[in-house]
Picture 1 (cartoon, one colour):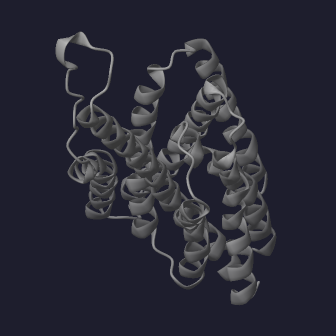
Picture 2: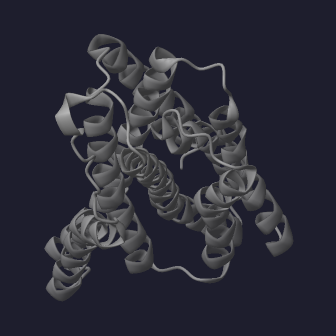
Amino acid sequence: MSFMDTVVLGALAGLTIFLGLPFARLDLLGTRSRIALAMFSVGVLAFLFVDVMEHGFSIVESAVEGFKDGDGSLGRAVGLAFLLGAGFAAGTAGLAALEARMRPGKAGLPPIAGGSPELTVDDAIAMEREATAARARALRTGMTIAAAIGLHNFAEGLAIGVSASTGEISLATVLIIGFALHNATEGFGIVGPLGSVRPTWGWLALAGLVGGGPTFLGSIVGYNVTSEPLELAFYAVSGGAILYVIGEVWTAMRRYGHRELGLWLLALGFFVGIATDLVVVYGGG
């Protein structure tokens, strides 16, 4: 498979993420529907977490087995294990610290004097500021999810590029088809936690590029460079970031109730992640 063919097909595999993004613009969704969509996205993210950490562990375990069999060094095994831990920490604690620095201070609503139900001008301004801050937090969470998915998709793009460069055309083709199906569900993972926030088309376009574009970039890098530490770093940071996002979305959704509905949709999202990934497994990816 030529370099240009690999780049074009890698781009197509990443662009399927846009299939789920337009759902964020629908005004027909009620509270239950939005909770269901958000928890479905959590299920997809939970599968992605298991998937990326499994790939990361396999790289470290191969290094340890190589050292045991005398084919590798202890330093390489320890270094890769440290890279996995450090990358995971960067994706969880590092992302939480960055998000805390970006979050503006909360402006509480002032009490209404004398218990009057009427709102003052200051009350109205405070409520408007809180609504604006809530919208900003939701959009920031969605973009954080897109970035975490993008890290995961970069590693997937590496797999496409490496298989294409080594002449394994059938494997590369199945990987592209499988990742395209898989990425189609990831758009829901980005927009599900937005709740009632209706993003602009420009925001959705940017989120799609952040989440799906790295598949295209990864296929370019993978075609020209083969680096296990690079692949492991992206798996580790992605796994940590996805776990952080799952916690944030789960906490936000608990306020709205409908616990049983949410858990059923979480399980459905996890199953859909498994189903789409089986195509990749079938191809040997």
